[in-house]
Length: 403
Image (cartoon, rainbow, N blue to C red; front, top):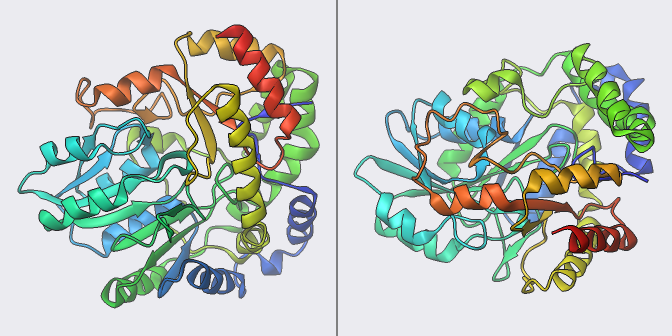
């Protein structure tokens, strides 16, 4: 059986059946009530006043940044992040300033203090892999320096910090429903706020956007179907065959990639930003109904890893993935793991900005040494609903014998 960190991890039988049904109902793909229903459920769940869906987390971030005047201003965000968090900043003609991380893999408050300037306007906190950042400390720093606080909650839906949900501390926050996030509709995102002025701007931005094309929606609906019926079975036979099958689907645009080629060059593809199509909102609503079960499962699997590797327990974290820092060359370990049908490379490694082949002209090397060191030594272990306790024990045994 294939053990994978990021090959369409969240899908269960009901998700696949639902995607199949929606594929054959194209009149439901664009317009419908599901996106609005998801917004209402989000507001109730988080206890926020306003929520707005978009077709991706980066689209939600783009809308948030557009609602502020950030041109020529500095936006402080952590190193060890994804280009999807950086490109919207560049699109808004703002300047990303990278802050080093601490042991939690989140923004280091002390380095934040050192890098604030008169041009700084926004601090953007990332709760990495479902582990809460030092939100109260960073929030106080932001207030002392008249900075706006935004939360990147792409990894952390349902995670609490001192009894309060991540995503409810900042002036605005954004979530992702990407294919490997806490819940998944392959693509999708949400912007939330308690600020009426920001909410009115977000609503105006959302209203003026168009829906993605029917073809783009079709690509996303086919993702859970083809991954489970063809790609994962191919990987189960042979890793080379799995890569070939997935590569063919990408080459002929039957499936879209999680990161577009333009994004690796610091650009925004024309598929973003867009409205959240009803067809994907249907999938997201189904997943949202399973959120608590999913997060309890992630915690249970993470507890096994914590005990197996003698890592201190983190009760607040949900662990979208479980980060493990090792001394052994991660390339060597991952190669050995693939021979055991363990596909543990999620792309979040070897670079302070992922994916690895992203243009890093905005980052100067040496600026965030802890993040650079972490990127070279990290393995991210799967915690999703399709990882059983036996799978986790198998991973632990393998790694203990090889690191």
